[in-house]
Amino acid sequence: MRPKRYPYSWEKADLIFVTKKEMQFKVTKLQANISRLQGELYQLKTK
Image 1 (cartoon, rainbow, N blue to C red):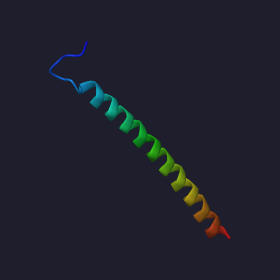
Image 2 (image 1 turned 135 degrees about the vertical axis):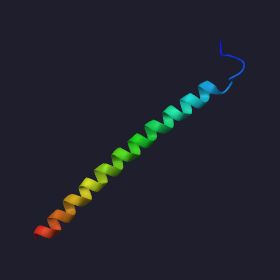
Image 3 (image 1 turned 90 degrees about the horizontal axis):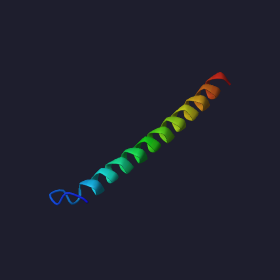
């Protein structure tokens, strides 16, 4: 069913989609770590 001229277009699109999802997940994890670190810093400052 795929057009012959673009044999890899679907695979590339899937790869890009997966990579975007992974990057979003990593960014979310990073943001969570940053906010946790900021909280620890704040606790250290207020001691």
